[in-house]
Image: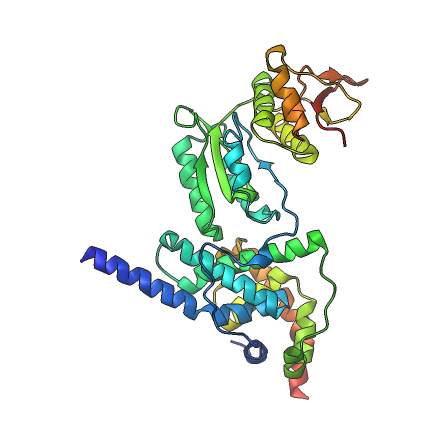
Length: 234
Length: 161
């Protein structure tokens, strides 16, 4: 240790010792302290490698939203790194690797959850669901755009997403599926649409304040796909 | 016997975590530059560690707790930036009365680098250990520490005067 290091240590110790700290008050383990919660809670969804049936347990999940909506860039990067450069990560391998990253980064209160269908899947994908403190493993969708559209439609029906979340979700799934350049539109004046046999379901979902996927993307002047969302009037 | 051993281990861990509270809170006060927030975050960190103590795989409890506590602290700092609900507050009396130059100099250092400095100077953790706690490569820690010490050098040499 150099002389400078010793001085630094001494002065830091003195400064730290001066911090007046009260006694441990025994916060119940089920009630984390409040300052890490934001005043306004909204769902935030980060899909790293989107997959089918992203939010099947939507109703239950919505009720479990109790954690602050703060960015988790280190975790997202660490999870993305597991899939980097690999065409396929087997579900068991993914679970082990994700848990290892959670442990390494100190995310003790996060869990690795499995979406239905993961047991039969050859490859897994993962979504970091910040409000739930959960990394969810799901069957991979590969590069199938049609399947990605089904995932989007179902995912938006399964979970009530606001405008921003829905746009983020659609963009993430399409990007992961390797879509050509596209845009996502949630224009109040835009098209409204639904599969004929689900018309009532879609309309009720929109009436409840949620966005749905219109399907049948159109093209802009440059030939890029426009994916429309139908949602409540702002 | 195995069960008794396991129960004893859990009880010991709980006691150890609670005993670490004051130190963690003080450490976080220098990272967050806010004593009240530091106390809340430290309590949240210990609560979460207690709740998930089965995840602890042995080894350095302090490092495990600091990993959780610092993550929550950085989240808190990010949240503050996001909601911008907090106004600049006055400097705390305890800091100004103890070492105003150091307190002000520390303010100019980015929070993660400040945390790395504290873990190095006060805990004696290696760069690799700090990297694991903060979730950054060892080389990054080395670079941070080199820069932060350079920035603090001017106020440290004043000791000679």
